[in-house]
Length: 458
Ligand code: SF4
Image 1 (cartoon, protein in one colour):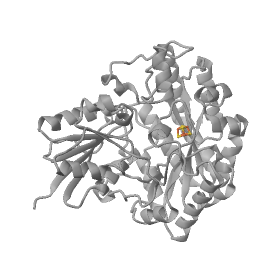
Image 2 (cartoon, rainbow, N blue to C red):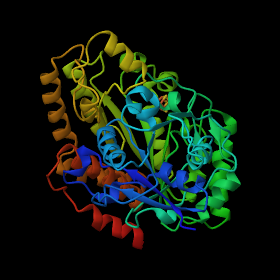
Image 3 (tube, rainbow, N blue to C red):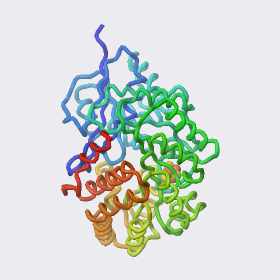
Image 4 (cartoon, rainbow, N blue to C red):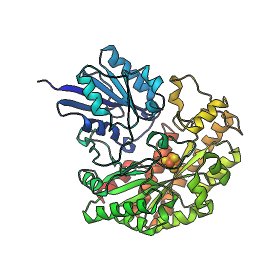
């Protein structure tokens, strides 16, 4: 019997697609790999990532698409192409989960929340000719998780990715993670993560968890077991992850992270001032204290790991001077890589509701205007500046912080602080990625591919 065909698509992002953007920075669409893994074996599956492959219509029985806010319009376009051919379409991902009514006007089916509890039912219903319009996912415990079908991913991703935890008990105003994945921190059993890691062929791995170490002594111990397990099983990877400032509380975490191949940690710094942290409800940073930032960076460096600091610009409490102060802090502090983004009210967040209520959204022709919601454009009226003035100031700040000479100087400083060439190179690559995103069309100071080659051959 002929197999049914499922096409899964990661739509292109209008912002990254048409500029100078290195595909090395792309991660595989893990959610599509999981969906493929949940699909019965009598289906033929193809995963298309439009960041690599030009779209060409192909026949299918069912089409599934994932999208975030910035690329949702492309998802809507793709859906209309398939619906015209009478092929049913399914949308999942964070945007559609937050705005299911909007998504339902463009897709036959909206899959809300995490897919593990719903996808098999959806396929079952499809096979019986009884597809529903919506499926609501549950927040299941992360045990016996499906292993993503990495064999279906495009072969040219430089990094592999893997997820070991979901959910966040914090409640930052601008973030939708705790809304999508819930406020309970769920952890996969260490042995299951190690088994999956052993199936990953790439040397460079990105742990996509929002916080790999969590917020409790137990979760820190679990992270240590994971890192020790990697060492014990001889899983040799160079890896990068996200964590909160408390990653440096327990030096055993850093010691075993480094020994198992950790080269860089992204930390949500957001601001170097208390007023802004209070505004966004960044509880952990406030609890640790801004005066501790440097100590945390130094401790991470001590173990040969670099720090990628995520910073937010344009908060209501930010004056124009505050933007330049934040940049100066990023330059002077020990953070190795800098991710400077414009505060963006994403649908579903507390920030969005507040800004909408105050009538301060500038781009409101939805869904068309979602294309502007990619963290590098001003989409709402700042409280203390005109929007034009703010955007000009951002361009100036980006020019200061992603300046060629400064990036090279930072790399040398990282090398000195971490005494680890891979950690310094990884931080430099991350700065180059931001440089390329911010200054589309302008060549980066050093070719990241040369550095990457060095990383892989080392
Ligand atoms: S920004 Fe980080 S700490 Fe805050 S709610 Fe989101 S995931 Fe949690």
